[in-house]
Length: 182
Image 1 (cartoon, one colour):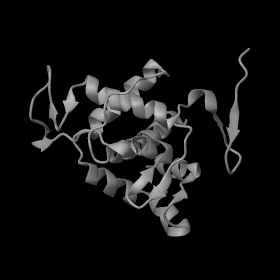
Image 2 (tube, helix red, strand yellow):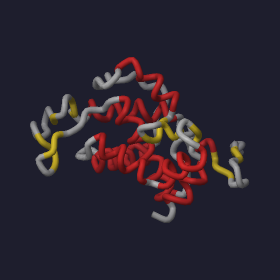
Image 3 (cartoon, one colour):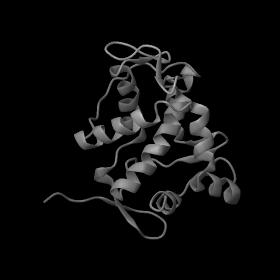
Image 4 (cartoon, helix red, strand yellow):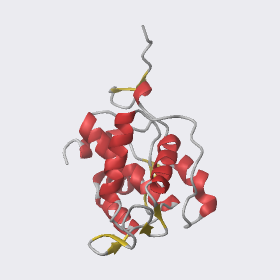
């Protein structure tokens, strides 16, 4: 029988680590998803429409800044839909919204440039790939600035900054309280 690893978080609630991914693994999947779906330089190529994607709004390329905001929304929506964490890494309340520091520093060298296709070592489960793909299509038309504003208006980031200040960890309990009820 498989030994189930569990991790305790504040408040005593348990989350199964075996069902979670590192934020870096999901980030690589997301970057490659953008490339595999022909989303480059603000346009759709290949068998997709060239030019604008939705409501005459240009598509945003995948940058380090955008990547971190998308990870935040994926974590929240996954929690809301499944009751589980998608990512085992914690987010921090940085000035421009939630960030996973490891992911930020991994791609920081690209500044605001498009992130290149990644070599993937760890594979995601098909159900999680579908979930991520559906959410990326949902957020694709949003400008990165809208993702920042939306994440900063939500309780996990806002509460953490108000109570503990910028640069502090966003407690997973804040995600649970917010996304399970919104």
